[in-house]
Image (tube, rainbow, N blue to C red; front, side, top):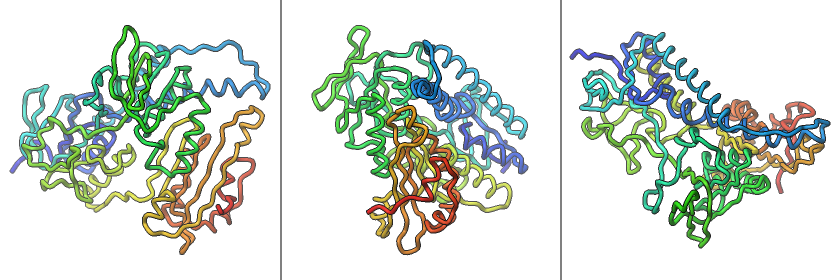
Length: 451
């Protein structure tokens, strides 16, 4: 049977774009459809604009620390509209780069919603026509989830809307205890917003090492973020210009804005998966095997829509593995072990490998090396912010199986540390490496063994 395309990709985010570009460069006829802007969540309404907001919010701390170093900082002010406008300009530039790169690779781009009609047919909604493909890749990502059971849930914004607020609020309540919630709580607080974080669990970042979670808790409170833990919303009401948030612990919070950051869901509703017979799990995620194939032989899925490891670099590497396997005669699988992760909180978190508890739950006997200290930069500034470094070592082999850091610039450190850790470095080899002085990073090769 003859098809219009060898590969048609639904979703032009980081993973879908990479898979499509490579497949086309390897000789496939490729089409791709995107209902929003090309670049996906990360570039348009996620990692990239968020990092600009993080940078903006960090200046307030830098101004405060500058005095003891001899700087006289005069009156400073912040203009939200300037930040948003400059962020938009950069996002426009990146969006255009993604479009240009697709065209250079020979991929045909359709800026239209696409839905499956059967296992080989895609309906382009805006163009009101069908196209066919031998293979179909679904890479539509995820979307913010809000608790619709809460009265007034629609009065809150999500990470989709926060980048386009017309005014910076004076006060905000953020719901959630994961990456997005914590990052935006720090952003708002750094920009001078009265910020409260509400989370249903007793500790933040529940999937991270417990020592990191506890340290972050202290640092957030020190920076003025109010924490309401082990509680959730029961109702949100608009009262004149304010939003009144009722909590299960009996408290009432009043704020200008409420932000939902309680998780994301695969964006599969209305995609036509049932028409093609594609299986999803209870959460709506597309079920795939180790080669990203669904239960339908010619349909594949990568990225957040599979709810496997929801990180942009993972989606990109999954896209590469797919293209190499199917269009370059180089069978490739994605390796999900030792993926470095970062939370751009203030201070930020960097982590790779198993937490202490995960190792113990897996029956691994471990040695722990750990240090909690105030970095040199903070001494003259009388800044109480601390760093914590923790290494989890398998006792039987001395291999480093986990590394967990919190402090200034640790995401940059963890990317480099992930390389030797992924390839089986021992802690003896860490300690045999000469320290680089004076740096905070030198502590990683001199950590004392925890009692």
